[in-house]
View 1 (tube, rainbow, N blue to C red):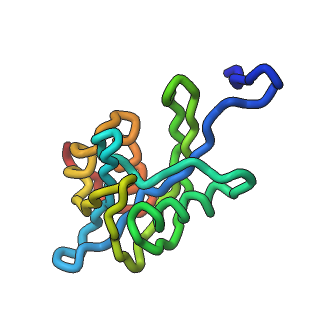
View 2 (view 1 turned 45 degrees about the vertical axis):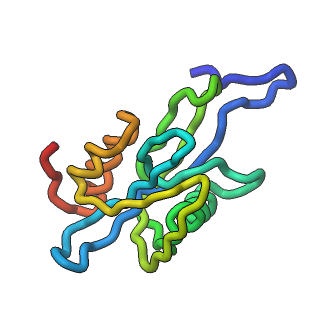
Length: 149
């Protein structure tokens, strides 16, 4: 695949990172996944965002999780990288599994809601089809049973 470049020869791909954030339900002990609602796009997605210049991808993923969800998280295995067009440019998002250890969500203009859902419900709620395979990938790396849906 050719890497898109601008007139000066720089790669124009938007570099971003995020996490498939999860926790164990206090009630059932089952895995719950965190989705964020972005009012600008009226969509449900994983917490993610653009990397700052020189920022390592995992550090950026954990920063975005903290900024968008108010959660501190322990990173796990790296998951698949998603590539798709966004605003006329190619975008690449590296994802990690991450377990939430403490959360204190405060709504912002960027993210106005977070929800914690069972895997099947999270898969259904995700707006973008390219985000959905990460549900089963997370369950596989955590050695949890895959859910219907």
